Length: 294
Image 1: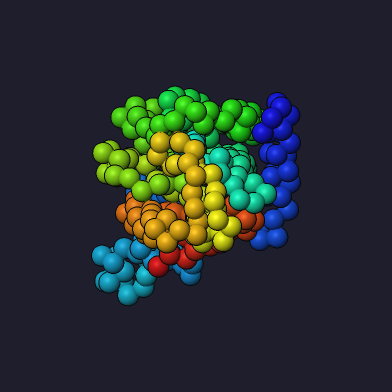
Image 2 (image 1 turned 45 degrees about the vertical axis):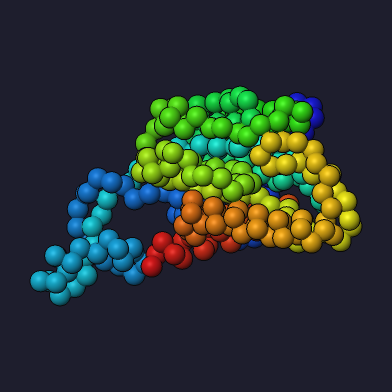
């Protein structure tokens, strides 16, 4: 994304799509999918159709013979943190856009939804050697400016090499309790973060994984030059080699196992570089809301 105007142009197009989404109100779906119930009890009220079944107060319902539910004081706002893991492998793309461009567009959609919902939004941008933090801000203009800054950050240099190492201890000190953390990455297989249990207790952790179609099914074109996901090295890769195909299948299995280990189904979204991202987001919101209502 070259040029200062490019990120604002993309955000303008995304905002136009969000506002005209056929499955509106999209912002309401976003709010219902992520806003936690207030943690402070208010009172007991009559249960009505559509209320959360899990809020029924059985101690009151049983003796009165009619359903009553607990009412909680709503959280006034949501703090959204875009955790963008800018690994070298994101620069791959077999089609019209790279994995990095796909994830940045998804980050833009989430930021615009948070702005429309009057939430706060900021980001943590991590590369193999540096990180950049922007504290969450309120207001549409402030959120758009913050997100445009993220979208306009330069590509990490391929010759730098190395794996992204997020300083989770510092991350925990940086953002407030109960923030919604959208971890955007391609999630290569690796050990769980040492602080993962603490992160899940403190935040709503949502994983947004990007993958390219070639990562699922190798092309029948012979030799490719690829970026090794961990070291960042450029390596020749023979797609027709039986050994390489078995290694690829093992890698896919390991990656999916790591993904399953990190996030429950209601807290993860996988998008492809070929997807319509707004449609994928709407499907995710609907699936999450259906599950949370059970």
